[in-house]
Amino acid sequence: MISRFSLINAGLFPETLPPCFVSNDAQRAFRGIVAELDSKEFNQRRTTEFAKYSGTKHDGNRRFFGTPNIVSYFHVSTFIHKNWSKFESRFSESNYSVGVPRILDQDADRAIQVPSLSELSARASKNIGFAPIVLKTDIAQFFPSIYTHSIPWSAHGRDESKADQKPQSKTITFNALDLFVRNCQAGQTRGIAVGPDAFRLIAEFISSGLDKELENRMGEKVVGAVRHVDDYYIGLETEADAQIVLSRLRELLASFELQINDSKTKIYSSLEPVNDLWAQRIRKRFRGDTYFSAVEWELIIDEALETARNVGSDSPVKMLLRGMDEREIYLRSEWDFIEPYLQRIVQRHPHAIDYICLLVVKRYAIDLGIDRIGWARVAEILIIRNLAFNNHHEVVWMFWLLLVCNLSVEHSMVESILKSADPHVKSLILQAFVDGKLTHRPKLGLGGRLATDDPNWLVNLIARSQGYSKAQFSGVLAPEFSHLADKNIKLVDLQSHNEALADQRQQAISRTRYGYDDEVDEEDEY
Image (cartoon, rainbow, N blue to C red):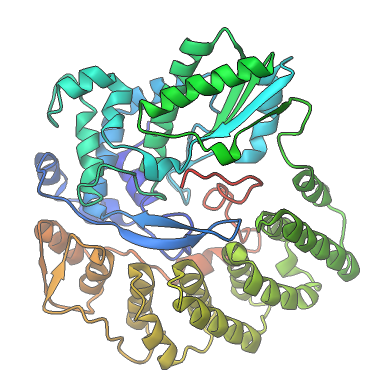
């Protein structure tokens, strides 16, 4: 059973943000207004905008993530909590899914964990069975394409849902979830936010329903199939069957306002590997506990970088960094040899910036020393370069590195960062000033009233809760925000992560928080 506060406490922020963005204080802070919030859940005027965040993709492209307003997200999480048995029942109906989210313990750093693509090959081989042909395809831009009205369609049927669209319907109960999701995104019906755990559960709910319907329509032609989030691998006896199933799947998706990704669709022999051979080779490198000398590390690094160039992806680099974490490179004498490599890699492989920062912070946390001058300069280069393109991911990670490693931060750099539209990095600056890590008071331009329903809700709530501003809240959620601020809710924590990493047994890269998007053929559901 998943609780509404587990989805808020550990599932509000996108996992692609630095670990300083936390919401594990939410349950305490919400105490005293839960009943009042429940009474307001169907108020359609309580729409808010999420804080948008420009992230990286393994192939050099960009994707947008979002942190929904914490009060609006409360209603989404509450609905899932109250209807969890229906979610579990739906997940169990899919004979194809290998991506059903696992509910994690309350002390985990995420509420749920989506199985990684590395788990796909074993299930694919078993499910596809004797089939000589495989149809591989996926849903184009899955999360941004989800039509919120299709949530009740999936739960109750399209015609039934269209006939009764009342949010408080006693029959079409998932109309309420449709409303709550729209209230998180300014009333928009197209797409759902990428990042929060509740929305991953909603996406899997819809996908599992599609699996069941596809099996009902084409089960006699499908030998077996697997699906991971939006990626399908379907085993068939002939290429003609594959074309027929593809056509039926296309029709099925279209009925939910979704589309096949034709550029990633192919029909091929089932003897071809599901996981790329280069990925299997990198994994094999790190099996066992063999000691690697500096010379051996050089070869391993060069091989991974060459593979990344050849396949046009940062995924080999992220797998390399995972291997470094498994070998606890930050504890070893070879760190001095590898550190300059990391400083060069981070400037050429933006999708690996999070893992590199985590490794460096781990080394700092265990007090073994880092190249302070070198990392300060690398951070400055990357921040200035990426500010020009509004690349929030690179800016927020490198600025976090500067802060938690107590590296020099020039006031001119802070002023430049404040020109960014990203509420996350502004929140980071605000908390850093409150914590005494910045000497100059940042000019955030908050004004005399703090909005509760626009993308800056995060900055405004932190400003009041941490004593930076005494301005009053405005907007439809002003009473709730005032309550949370009076409770001094903590949403950015620049200390706890380092304190946890001081334990040498603690890995730098969390397997639950960062286990989703570092694998081989990263999903296009975003």
